[in-house]
Image (cartoon, rainbow, N blue to C red):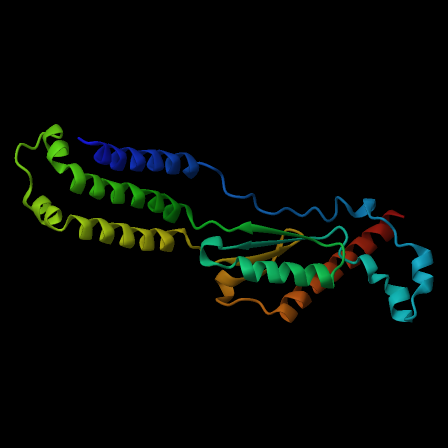
Length: 228
């Protein structure tokens, strides 16, 4: 077996074991509601700044730091090229709600799809290894005569390798995609692309997050009145 064949067999084995190790890495944890834990640590608005405002509505509401203490998690499918949409929504929310914490994270596919996606590279490299070094592999497996289908693959070696590599990558990309764009506000789901089968509009998402923050502020206000 020459150096080229050793390289073609050694590299796939290295990548396969790397995928097996990465398989057991836990997905990102589900976002938790940290809003109420940080409520009592909010920095009160500066009364001097409120007196300098020209609009009475802004004086009474004090919306300058409306986003402080609130967290929005956007879990999206990174293999679906949704990162651009997530960054756009992040910038919009940070502008609309100053002080809000927006966290972007990958939303992994279901476990069966993740497991199957790890099998695809092993099949790819197995076919490539058989095509390149079948004469040495089959005798070691106890086959004295090479199977007929091996000669068909060997006759068009480079075509077989390229087709296996292309189809395997397409199938693996499909298995790794979740199609998700899930938005959580303070740990509660406010929009799900998996459920709605569409992306949220900027105005729509701003309204959903704004109402969630407003409801949280009302609940906190009632709780504060009861404790006072």
